[in-house]
Image (cartoon, rainbow, N blue to C red):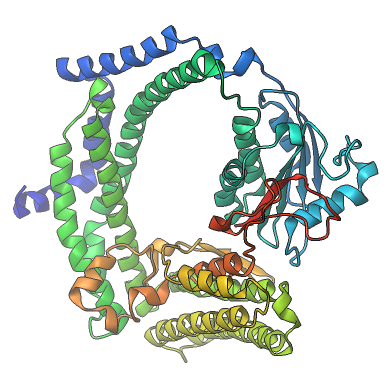
Length: 565
């Protein structure tokens, strides 16, 4: 599509976008089956899936046809769960044998060994539990038929524990804990616990070996493969259409705002560092908009079974990603023009710009909590350092509030405010890095060398992104990291900054604005590392700060382990 055609298209789209483009998508729903080729491919995929399912009885997925609902009790000592709905949801799950599932939340920032905390709770609250958690016949083990799912939200620990008759391997324990971690990191305590329970149902009581392999296991795998392929084929078609519609929504918004975005870009000063980096991304925006417009024309009008093909899925996914990037970037351009000129709505933009810095300050305060809860806190100089950093965090939070007032009364220029945010972000990461290094170096335990090595290795990982919310100093807020003027890992068109050489004048390098939370996670994992022991059930898995054993258990050897998130 030529430039003049694109310009003509842009002129017409704002008035006709809804009619033309929505008719385009509606026609895809009723435009026939999609042609012989796509229909044949669709039928072939469905036929293969149904053949596998029909030939291999679905009952072999459940060994011996067994299906059992658990009994459940919830002890929410941290006050983070909806107890009754959670118990009911877990009770609806199907297990391969009779089980009692106990959910425990442990409050406090000082939970360094969740295994010990769970054991202590079981011993001190024996009269409060629905069933005994510790075996009456052998008090060194958990009761038969028992599964305990535990989380310490403040200390960022998760664990699972099992009676000997339902014990699973360390790898399976890690899988159960990992099932909850993404949700726990987002403070979705309810959803993470449900995910952990569901994963437990998947792995507990799994049968293996002998004649059962040929009779149940292999047929079960085949039947599961048929179900999986069927679900995937249907999901692919539904998802392709959903992503195409979402892509269209983003693209339509960009096209509708195109002229406004162009006018706003014209007001952004390129002799100002932050304005310069945004304009570098705007030039990428113009080029990408033309390319995406051509891609929409090439995408055409899929209908019927065409949506279920691999090609439609891939192209719809790509269009969604690229159209969303354009939509985010035109928000950045509008935000930049609004804020640098202190036009109406600048306070909303400023609140969004403060978000990443406030989230970093929150992470630095969390690092102080992590250190204060560890053994190195006994070191007087380290304790004094965390106190100093807490005070610095409080002062910077106050400074951010003062900056808002100064912008309102005109004593602080917008560009200077952005520069100061850059400096604050840099100082916060420097302080966090220095504090974590001092704390890890102050470790005098027998595991100190390995913990330092693990911390050094974690320092090279830069894949974290800003969460988009913060809690600090009694306040809280949310923001959109995709639409900030200052660069962060979620910023669209970062490649345009790197390739244009604008990064040095735009607030520093890309890495300068990665969240401090990745550093805190690296420190937490390294500082809590404990090597594997010789015992099977009380060992530790080194891959993810995965700790087992009971330091004060008095010979307790129950199966289970915990890890950090």
